[in-house]
Amino acid sequence: MTMEKKRPSSIIFAAQRRRWAAAGAALILLIVMNALRVKLKSAALESRRQAKSLAQNLEDAQDALADAQSLRDMKEDELSRAKRVILSLTRSRQALYESGLELQEEDRILQKQWEMLSTYLQVDLESGRISVMRSGQALESYPVRYSPPRAFGGEDKPLPRIVRIISKERYAAPERGKSEEVNGHLEWQPPEVGTSARASALGEFVMFTDSPLILHGPPKNAADHAAYPHDCLGLSWPVARRLYRESFVGEKIWIAGEPKPARAAAPTPAGRARAQLKRRRKRHGSK
Amino acid sequence: MKFLQSLPNLLPKDKGYLRTQRAIADEVEALRRRLSWRLRGRLYIVVDAKAEKLYLERGFRILMQADCSVGRGEFLVDKKTGRRWRFVTPLGEFHVLAKAANPLWRKPDWAYVEEGKPIPPPDSPERLVSGELGAYLLSLGDGYLIHGVKDEKTLGRPASHGCVHLGAAALKELYNATPVGTPVFIIE
Image (cartoon, rainbow over all chains, first blue to last red; front, top):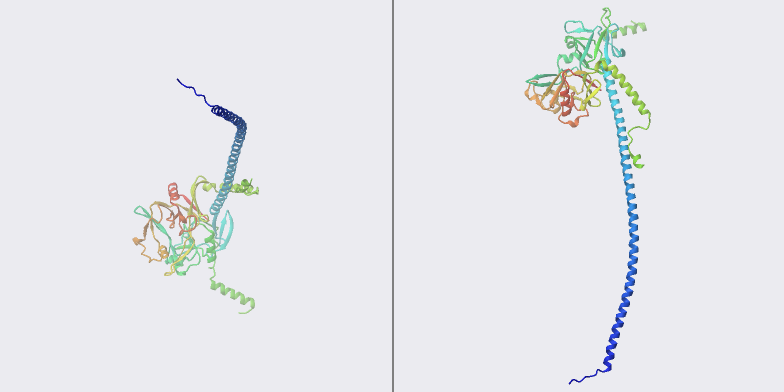
């Protein structure tokens, strides 16, 4: 037989209080959670709104970027076109400038060639002068001592009317250069300065022709000159120098006119001095 | 705009420039007419001794042009004998008298005087030097030549002893294009 024990009322109340406390806590928890939910919901709404706004901004920015990119492309196109135009303009200007230079270059070359081909020397046997001629006009004219040219050192062969300068030698001293083929090789020997009779016969500023005529200044040695076979015009040093400077290799010398009838030989410098003294004495009435 | 203004303008602003150009063109035309009886259709060489340039032309058309070097115009005096040389390129109309490949040079007295060395006898074999004249040679007579040069830096200024120096490539082209008898105008 069991005996039922009754629980005391204090215990019952304590249990009830715990239940009520738990219920209260749960209620409070629910309230807090609800408050949090409301807050989160409002935050989410705000975020969504912001995201929407940002998406709109992004779209606007993308549009602006596309516009800017197309503008940049247009500018780049324009710039490259402008560069192409400028390059082509500069090139055409350069071509024009260079063609101008080429034209001036050709002008210069043709002028010089014309000068060379139209210049010749004319020995006028009647007046006893030698002239530098260009296109039929006498540019300069100088007296010669021997007109017609006097033959020295050998037989007197008649000169052709037209002869040509074949070489010029500044000092009349160089031996002629030559080039000859030896064993299949061309050997070259340039003009050399020599001490031969030829060198002292012809002096300075020598112009050889394709005939016995040689134009040259006063000889270094009169005996060598007389012995050297050539036809001579008897040029003075300044005339020989002038003609040497004004003439070209390949230039023609035209021997024009008929010589004057023979007359007394040209006076020597000593004879000229004697005649001058005679004239002076006559002027002053003295003997 | 600044970029445009900074671009170099090769042409003068004065429009008279073009008129001058036209006048020069007319002059050139007149000169061509005057010279056509001698030069039209002919092959010839022009050496501009002042500008140190060589042109190969046919008629009035330039086939090739190259820098060259002509006589430097200096004097050389042999103090022992009193002999004098002047290294000038003569002006005038010449002709190509001979052509040769791999030419030998018979060294002249002045080369020894210039080097301060004793002068060997005229026929001494030691005078013969190869390679000094370049690969090709065109002889203009009287010892004057168109030939090559060892130092091509000297081209464009007077540096020779009277010959016309050319660079190796231009010399080869000239040698191949020019027959014996071709006129050579040396102008200044």
